[in-house]
Each structure stands twice: as structure tokens, then as C-alpha cells.
View (spheres, rainbow, N blue to C red):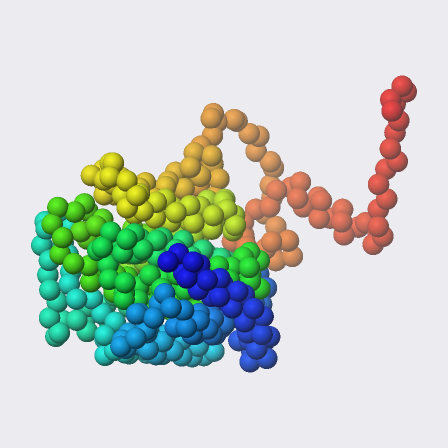
Length: 445
């Protein structure tokens, strides 16, 4: 069973890697190039629309999987594979329009809802909602299913899109999260808690392969960006995978937290982008701006300002994703310590917020007497003791011809030493002055 998933993973990875080369050239011809500006951290023009290569590799991997005997039950008598493909095409088109000519936030949201509607119409939805620790299962009515599906797709797609701010960050996080969720789904299937016809693990492994194949092109310094088309495509694939796995496990009593509420697993494995999105919404609401207003206060931007650098910031957030994913997989292989896992994960979330909170950075800068690059204020060091200084004799002179006069107030006195230096420069001949010859002391080398 594992060999089939490994084969699909390899097809998705190699397909994305190979197809991204012509996409890079196509982006340059179409003028789909992102120029450096104050909002972005890259320093040179970079092609975008890498989502086209991702989508083509996704279609290739789905075609190969449909021909493998292992996945025959997934594709036979089911409209769900077609639903994922059509929804992926819709959200890719929305992202491409935004990459080529920026669209408004409501228009982008409408396209995401349309993709979610395609999923709902073709059966890619969740059937129930399990509440952890309580033991309650809520069966979703047909009237509520489209709304839940739309919220799920919009939430995850925008979370992946917002975290795509550094080279390789979104691709690496989704690769870790998708690989983790595929293993999680396979473990549930091994324990009889997930049907063999479930599409979720297959979509997850394809998403993981797509990201692995795209990373060589996207690592810092990036040669191509995935763009909104690629980020929202990955978000839709993760949303579809998590819905059909988390919302379709049977009602089982006496199971541990992670077995009984698999719908909450995405909140752990995608903890970094979801946390970043939540902070962005609250931060922009406090500032009075729109939710879609871009800024440079995301987690990855704060790490860069802390001095970690581009690549190290990416690795740190990859590590956090791997840690959270490890908490998900741990109870599927052993039954020890399951009760502590939710509390430990909550502690990790608090630590993540504390370490990346801007107040910590500003306090450190103030203690060192440095400057906070993320704030317009300059933190001046407190002098240890006051040193008396001699006043320099001054005289009132017109400030129009003095250097820096535009920055002085009218009638402000200029030190006498400065006036003497200016007069000396005016009287000096306009020739380059040679430095004095070096004098060698006796016995020196």
C-alpha cells in the first residue's frame, strides 16, 4: 500500500520540478514578474505564476494514480476526484488573474467560494463534526454543509496565501503538513477508522509532492514564485484532504483525542499559517484597516527583523511546523502520554506568540540602546552619568548659505568653529590635497 503513495509522490515531485522550468520562461514572456518594493523582501525582479506548473503536475499525478490498482476504489463510482480537479482549476484561474492584474479582495473571495461550491456539488464535503473531550458528534445537515465547506476552503486558502512571504516558506510548511496528514490518514485506515475509498490521503500526498518539486526553484534566492495561483491551489488541496478525512471518520467511543476529533488535526499541522492569519486579522482590525490590507508584521517578517535572516527564518518556521506535526503523529504510533498532548500544543502556541511578539524585540533594543527597525521611534541609550561640556562660542550669522540650513530654524546660531572651517574651505584652492607622508620612527617596522 505504501508503494503506491510513494509512486504518486515521486510523480508529483518530479512533474512539478520539470514543468516549472517552462513556466518560468512563460512568466517572463507574459510579463508576470514581481518587482521589488517596500512590501516585499526580495531584491530583484522574479517571475511568478508558478501555480501553473503545480496544477499541471497535480493533473499528472491524479492521472497516474487513477491507473494504479491500489487507488481503483478511490476513482470508481465517485465524483470526488473530478470535484477536486475542477475546484482546483477554478481557484487556479482566480489566482492567475490576481497574479497578472491584481483583483479586489471581494472578487478573490467570490472565486474561492465558487471553488468551494464546486467541491460541495460533487460531494467533497464533511459529513459530521466531532467535538473533542465531550464525545459529541454533530451530523451536518445538507443546508449547513455548503457554508461549512466555503468557510473551510476560504480559511485554509488564505492562511497559506498569507504565509507565502519568504522564499520557500509556504512550500516547505505545506510539504510538512501534507506529508503528516497523509501518514495520519493511512494510520487511521490501518486501524479501521477510515474507509479505503477515502480520497484524503491521496490528495495530501500529491500536495506534498508538488511542494517538494517546487522547492528547488523557490529556495532563497527564489527563481520563481508560486504566486496567489499556487498558494491558493495548495490551500484548496489541503482543505479538500482534511474535510474528507476529518469529517468522515465513524463514531467511535473511548478513543483518544486525536482519534476521536481528526477534524482538529489541521489546526495543529497548519498551526503556523493559521496562527499568523489570526494575528493578522486582529492586528489589522485594531489598526482600523481592512483585513486584506498588506503589511510587514507577519511572523516571518518579525523573525527577519529579529536578525535571523531570510533562510534561518524559514527554517525556524519549518521547525515549528514539524514540532506541531510530531504531536499529531505521536499518538498514532504509541498510546503513551496522549492526555498531555493538547496541553503541550497549547503551550507551544503561547511560546510562539511570546517569542515573536514585537514588545520583546523592542525591549531588547531599548536595553542595548539600539534602534527598532520595525518602529519609527528611536530608542536612545540612557547615559550612565552626566559629563559636563564646555560651551562653544557662537555668533549670530545668516544661515542661508550654511550647510544644512534647510534643516535649521531661522536665526539659529552656528558654532564659531564651523564658521571658521567653512571660510577655510572657501579660501582653499580647488585641488586635491595629498595626505602627509608617513613618518617612520626609529626602530619601528
